[in-house]
Image 1 (cartoon, rainbow, N blue to C red):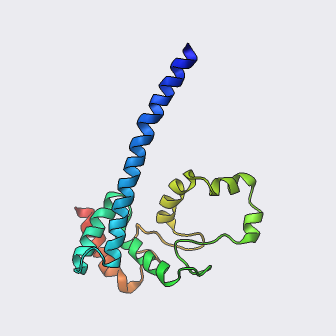
Image 2 (image 1 turned 120 degrees about the vertical axis):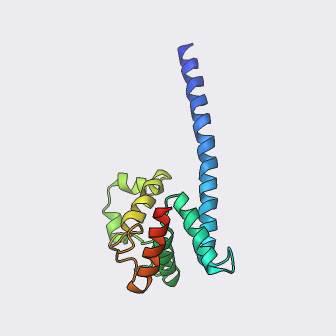
Image 3 (image 1 turned 90 degrees about the vertical axis):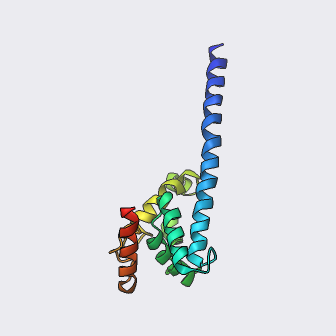
Length: 158
């Protein structure tokens, strides 16, 4: 009888945490997509409105909007290029073959992106310097620095 009680208790616990998590994940993804559309200019014809809405939405999900749009532009300019793409850096076959089996296993699990994405925002792709959170990092070029710094400062003040 104790096993049945424990099983029912665990199933109730899982059902009450996984369903809301899936809903929250869907909502956060939708917020990210609208912010992404702001970057592409498809949210509004007004670039200032796109930047304001994008900044507010991305800030609500802890993604630094202006660092991210610079990275996103670099990604689009180099999409599919094995060495220059910003957001998807392929692991060379030689390195992959030398990884432990446990590391290979973890790279293909759902939980890995949950940890990898925040680390990526903090320190960029392997082999690249800078941070999406730091408007003075190597990610932000000098011509973009004043606009990004001003907008980040305004966003942090709010």
